[in-house]
Image (spheres, one colour):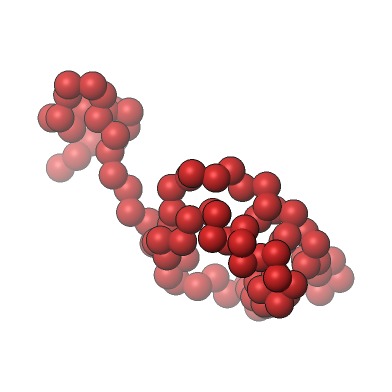
Length: 89
């Protein structure tokens, strides 16, 4: 494809992620990514992966998975929290 994602873009993005944020399904915290991505080999591998996903238009099924847990308001554990707009059945 014409506009490939560059290694520098991947580095810049990962380094811009704030510390102390929740991990994804892989349980890898942002701090670990920041430490690993500073090595050009790691950033190059991620860049190649992202370009391949974009070019082939295939998205890993595991990346579509999410664990969603409600955050309850203080003193309320009955299922009404920040996600009040959702209905639980």
